[in-house]
Length: 214
Image (cartoon, rainbow, N blue to C red; front, side, top):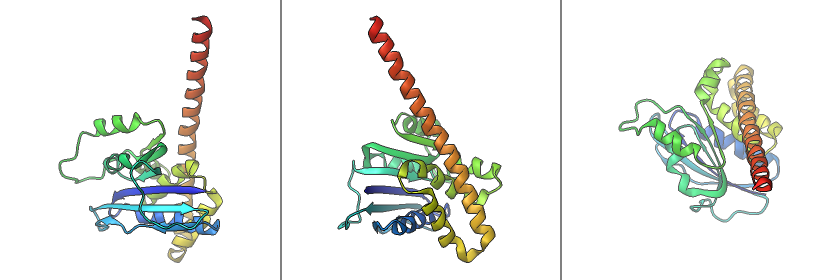
């Protein structure tokens, strides 16, 4: 197994908690991990970026080269777009579509989302809205992780166990809240992936029909 993930967002959104949970879950599966030093400023409002590399074999470098990332997970849409050059041809982007408030000179959101939605493998979710509706607003980052779990290839049970490990000191109610948010995201992410597969199958069928009648 090899999985190279770029995580991005803004300080205060909880992107580093996502990295910690994926790392812990990977260790539970007996995998090797390396995490690059965070770039940017992790305090509220500063951009946060981390490289997380996971493999069945020992890993020598903690940096992900351009064009090689298997996934970009982002809690901020502009930050997701920033790292697209690092994505491999078959890589996935899983991102929040709700921008972080108070970022100066923010580009037109419609333009950002249009570019992101043009990617072949992408899950676009309003994780803040999903978390709010499920009454777990403080765990919007776990909604994103849940959606990403659909494509990461790491067992959901391992990720939930890692959530319990990472948040265990904060009490059972906090663990339960984060696991609930994770499952909400997992359900939303699965629906998007299934819809894409159905659309792809329908497109292939139309092409076959067109070819047979042409």
